[in-house]
Image (cartoon, rainbow, N blue to C red; front, side, top):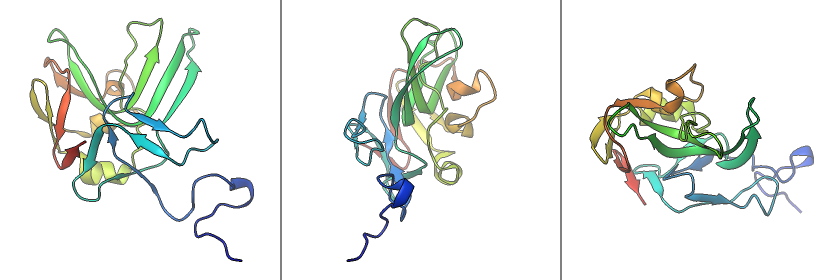
Length: 184
């Protein structure tokens, strides 16, 4: 009897296969994906209901599957964090700056000032960010802009970079297209 190519053995049994890198589309919003995490400790299946896939190559490399986790901040506020390459935005409503990001959605039930979408924990491969995501035209509810590395910054220093890319005093209520990607 042989072994399946990529099969994990020993301490890593049941974890990700060893023969390839994980790949994922950009997820349309925090509630547009689901994994089989309820079925097994390390999820292997991912269902994305809406988002954007690259026109060429179809998916981007990621270091881990998108996931949902809970945590508590230093003020004892409970958070539910949806991590992964999730397309998001902060709407400044025309009276303060708006932001675009690909990363985490952080929900806090008792903190109205919590930044919902951030560029943190997007799980994207740094090479893919540099090679294919910076410099794209994004179409949103009030116009278009060109992406910078701020939209994909995994480890921003302080506010405002964790919000993602600043697009100014432009209201943003949806993202409808990303250059070189196909919406689904």
